[in-house]
Image 1: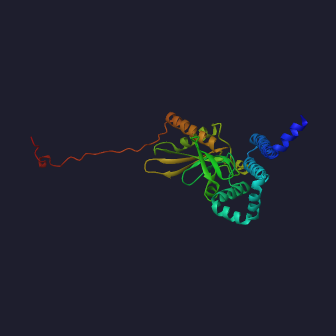
Image 2: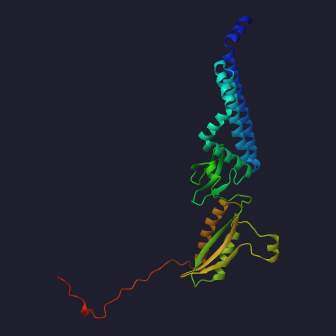
Image 3: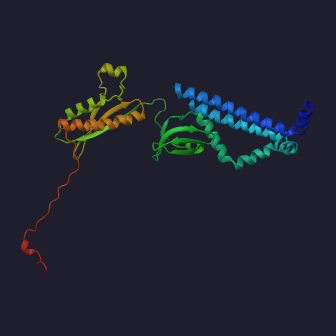
Length: 295
């Protein structure tokens, strides 16, 4: 039995070696991915600060493991070994050729490294672009960044393009957001009462936060500032500054206070004007000058 096993091993030595190398490669990649996912889960629970780095490093390590393992397996094939040696000997020429052929892909990878290092944005950041595109960063890969917009669609942007784009990061350093609540009231309405209503409705909202500094509090600065911003053609425009701890909560708060302020205005007699037009029909001074009607 032992002789048969040894004979089998000697006969299929190369095939077994290749299978062994590929198996170790896949197992090692699986183990790395498993550890990587556990680190990601812990990072998502504790903080998003290093989540971007973990994901990028995990993708890079997996790619390197597969590349090294498959290359080593090819190296052990006798009839492919001279080819591999020739490729190693001409690595300089090959590198130049590959550089020209895949400069866009290499540019995306290098841009990805710079994004991870400089961190202009990271996983779960809300970013927007001048053309109106906005969403939440879902993943940063070797070649591209995945953004999930607010319709739950995935937008794939190459790293080399997004790294050269002007973008707005709503979560950079500070997640707090200020929402402008702009409302116009009629000239006959009480400005002080309107200011009181807007202040109370915003302060009473559970998502509103106090953004005053200790110095502002000691000076008696109001938690919610409401000011007249414009005397328009048909309305007195008023603006309230409402703060929330994040952009999603700020949007919810903004929608809620618009509704509650409108209801309070209706109840308290504050009028929100809307455009009106008066149409006048001019009568001829002398009706006899009108041409006779045709029968």
